[in-house]
Every structure is written in structure tokens, then in C-alpha cells.
Picture 1 (cartoon, rainbow, N blue to C red):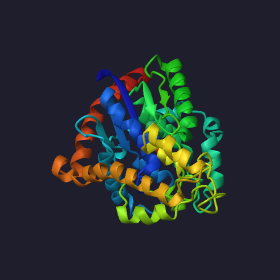
Picture 2: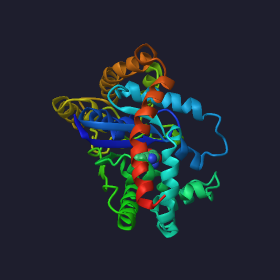
Picture 3: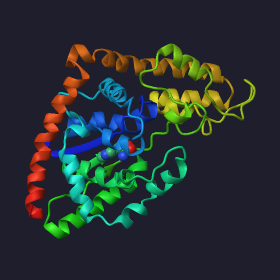
Length: 328
Ligand code: TRP
């Protein structure tokens, strides 16, 4: 553990986490908590940028997400698990960074334009949504991390964060190092129906799913859609299930499965059985840890309170420096 090195990342509490979250991001977080000082937070203010009108489920979602995190292997004793809205410095730094961020940087952000077009059932004309990346820059720069573990979709935001850091440093002097993106080597994790695994498509396998639910989900899962009969050879490279063997099984088993598929000696039903067994072995310890949260750490609130304190301690130092440099 290099205590001089820091990392930080966050997730919006929008619903239960699925396998895509685990292999795409969370696994990376779990590894990072061993290497350096790690800060992981619930981005509840970010959730409000789009879900501002109905906040009834926010608290529930926060609790469930922290449970998923602990289940996945994040250890509140090794890293800081905190809540964005509890560390008010994030708000102050957002305000200050908004002074130096040109509006044109925000309106030309590809994620902003894309989401404006794609999300049609909500009005995203609010200032908070436009300023989403400024809040994210504040979250990140606050902890001066060497790197930020995120999914690929977050890269435009991270680039903007670096631009804001450069602009700040050029006006007021060197305060913020430019953080690197820490991408997980492409983990392919398609949804049950072949589209991207997403809560809104209802095609996910969730970390907290009961095994019986998972069995029926897997039974209905798409495989190689060109393989109509059991006796037809299949193609693992277009199969929707095979990427999961890549994630969950050793190289030798993968090779056997591939061989069985292309020679039609292994059918999809049996292939799914292998997958289910592996999934069970993977999920059981995760769900056990999830269920033991109270016994080990008290409560979700206790975990977040301890994390808030650790985060505040660092954030306070950064803000003293920022205010000083800005003449406040
Ligand atoms: N935008 C991120 C997401 O949607 C969440 C997030 C907010 C974040 N602030 C962050 C991620 C800071 C990394 C660092 O997933």
C-alpha cells in the first residue's frame, strides 16, 4: 500500500448493481483498495441532476448500493466509502470551478449532447445537468488522485476534468495534478438479450439476485442465434453467453467449451449449466459478504459516517489550499 498515492471514484445510486458493473468497474475498485488510499463515494448529488423530481427512492438506493459494494469486496476498513452530499466541500469546489469553466466546454460535451437526445421522458434543461461535469471535476480534483477507475463512457468527463485542472493551475498556481483514467481491460458483459446490460432494459443479472431468479434468467438467455438445432455447430465469437465463460472460467475450460460448441458436441443447454455453476461459485461469497454487513460493520449508516469523516479530513485540506490560492 502506497499511502502517498490516492484514487477516487463514484457511482450514482440509481438501482441495484449488475455483473456489468462488477466486471467493468467494481473489480478494479476492489483491487485498488489494496494498493493506495482509496475513496469511493455515492454520487447522490449527481443522481439529482436527472432524477430531481422524484427522490423517494434515493435513500433506499443508496443503502442497496453500499451493500452491493461491500458484497463485491470493498472493505470499509481499507478504503473510505462515503456520501457525496455529506462532504459539503464538494459543493464549494463545484461553485469555484464553475467560475473558471466556459459554458461552451459544457454544451459541447458529447455525453451531454447524447443524453439530451436519448433521454426523452425527462426535461434535462436544468442547470444542474449542464454542470454535471463540473461537479464531477470537483469530486475528483478534491482528492488529487493519480488515477480514477471508471468505465469508458466516462472518458469525456475525465478529459474535461483535466482541462479544468489545467485552467485552474494556470490562473492560481499548481494545485491539481491531472488524473489518469484507469480503465478495466475490456470486460465484455452483454445483457441477457444481447444488448448492453442495463437496468432500464431489464436484461441484467444483478449481484443481489436470488439464485432461483438467475436460473430462469439464464434459461432465457440468448446464445448464438444462428444455432437453431442442437446438432448445428455454434460460433462462440458471436454467442451472447461465451463472453461470460471468458470472465468466469479458466483458459483450459474455455478452450473445451469453444471446441464443444464449434463441433456441436456441447449444446447450449449444457453450456448454460456450466455457466450457472460458475456463476453460483462467483456469487455465493459475494452474497454472503452482503448479508454479513451488519454483523461486521454495524450498519450502512455507520460505514458511510466513518467514510465521510475520512473524506472530509482530506477535502478540508484541499479547500484551505484552494481558498488561499484564489484569494478568498
Ligand atoms: N459520472 C459517474 C457515473 O455516472 C459518477 C461519478 C460522479 C464519478 N463523480 C465521479 C465517477 C467522480 C468517477 C469520479 O458513473
